[in-house]
Amino acid sequence: MIDAPPLSLRHLALWIDPAAFEATVRFYRDGLGMRLYWQPDDDNVYLAGAGDNLALHRAVAPRRVSQEHGALDHLGFFVADADAVRTWHERLVATSASFDITIAQPVRTHRDGATSFYLRDPAGNLVQILHVPDAPT
Image: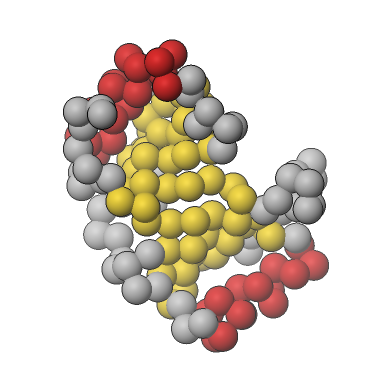
């Protein structure tokens, strides 16, 4: 097992067909009671539940939502702070060959102040390791 700070699965991000975007936002917000906590633009909505988050992204060309490729954007694992993000990055870079993973994007700071990086798991799924200061719970 890798020696690194603990992880917790925090959010799921989905690509949503443009024709269903507003209805999907409405369902999760009004139907399931998730709270809208950030909408940086018309194509991205971030909802908070009981300790988890759901990101809905309007799918635009050339991205397609289909039964063949699904709607999953990425899995997000929360860590305690930005230093833990960097620690995970260093360790996964060092062990990427043994786990058959690739680093997809380096550590960076996002427009909401989050720090993260992305990798591809052995099955090709995009995984994000991140810290969001003052994230909703």
